[in-house]
Length: 473
Image 1 (cartoon, rainbow, N blue to C red):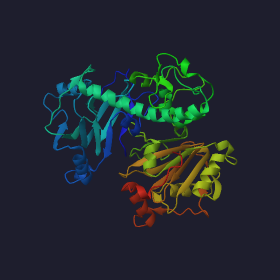
Image 2 (tube, rainbow, N blue to C red):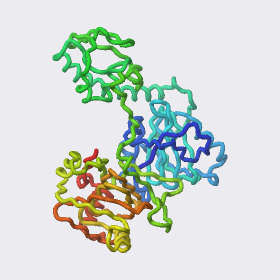
Image 3 (tube, rainbow, N blue to C red):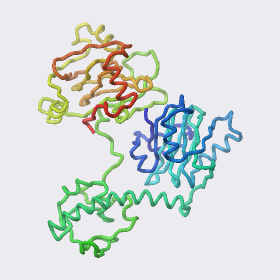
Image 4 (cartoon, rainbow, N blue to C red):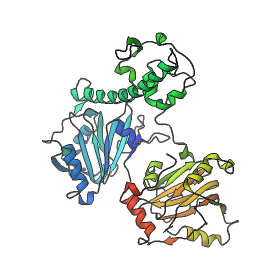
């Protein structure tokens, strides 16, 4: 599974080794980490000494020095003092590269708004923190991690505790973050500006009171749709100024890097600022988490302790696709119609699973909960009630997927899975098929089936050419 990250509850007085989730939890995507300069790879630690992917990363990035470090009370001299130093907010003049071989730990990094993001690294995770980023490190409640440290040249670990705004590495980091935003903004600005020059003498588009480039950076194409009112170039609000464009001879706003910072408090009321951390609407009807190994009633949630949630992006990496649809209007829903047409789901029927309505209920529920695979996709759209679909991840751990009214999921052919009701004991589901309806389970093990081999190639061994496309993306 991919690395996990989330915004931290900074008001909590809990042990620094606890997860410190916000309430409700706010997870952070790998794309957002990448925007902060944090890079990530998922590797195989079992053969790190001969791993070709690790070798390539080292060669490409010049990591010619490597050592191993065990961090735990028993193996680190002056453990408490060193952990205290690691947890003091600091920067480095060079990248910090850490590859987790055993155990787990947290790296906390500051985002663009100075909020703490907690990154939980586990076995197989390699991350790179860019030079100049404010960060800190601590163990989790497991109190142990074995890390590979990688360096360009001689190993140097010098921490510069905050504040270090005048440090060259910090200045370069800030500059790199801003320059990236400006680059995107300028490209969008050029397109819109060219259009407006041919349409009107006025710049007719929505903006914040800082600079139009802020909106362009995030609205991109949508900006061409937001032509709702006219604002003359000569009436640009402060602190924007005008200057003559030396190339095309027209006036346009001059800006500084500070104007491109993500302060969009001045958006017009009818143009809400983009919310990078907006909750995915699918999460209202589909949630997933890693299961414990308890033998309790199969209809219970079976969370691990502490709970380990799984994002919809992580499910997509396993080939599990998902949508949130309008269950109350499923017969006329244009979005459902579009999905069926694009994916060839020509047959549909409805099924109610509950003790009162399903013949041979006990026997069928037992069969549904046997681990199995199918040679075709399994498509289920929940029209009422709720239930659990359990799927195996890359490491053969069970992930419980809770589907509620409005949630539709597609399980790929070849994935090991099972189904059960939750404690409400009722679900009404739409079943969709390509062609005639066929539901034939092949109970585990069936690794020799072509469907299983194709699934393993596409999603376990990660052959991008063989993957399904997430139509919800």
